[in-house]
Length: 189
Image 1: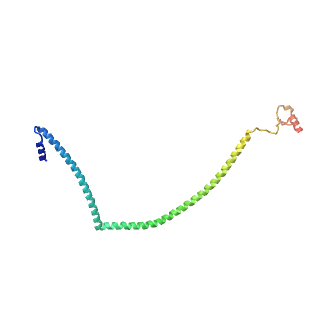
Image 2 (image 1 turned 180 degrees about the vertical axis):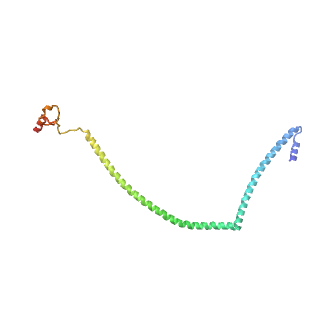
Image 3 (image 1 turned 90 degrees about the vertical axis):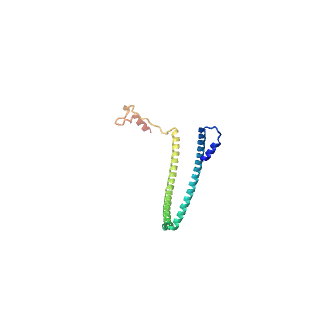
């Protein structure tokens, strides 16, 4: 690279000072270094991706070889297969007991709902009876209020009894209300 820089310096016009040449050289060095860093980062990313891909491929290859050659791994696979078969068998037996239990619970709930429906029907009938009684009472109340508004007329006549004159009482009676006027009225009838 220093040969390339020397060629660039040789092609520069004459009369440049040594400090100017050093500045140009520094700018070129910086530009070249930046470009190299960019290319290195791109290449690093590509290499990392390539290595990751190869690592995954190597893991898969190792796993396949392990599955083919290792007895413990094969035993685990056989155990998992047997476990799934046994689980299916046990699950089918359990499903039968679960279904019967759910059916029994469903029958109990259905019976409970029927009982509640009967009670509800009785309550509705009682409510209807009470509503009829309330409406009858309201009608009676309205008719009583209307009759109360009408003026009261009596066909009977009242007799007024007073104590105004105690000496007009007949002799020998202790009743303060029996006067001679009262006795005369009683005899006229």
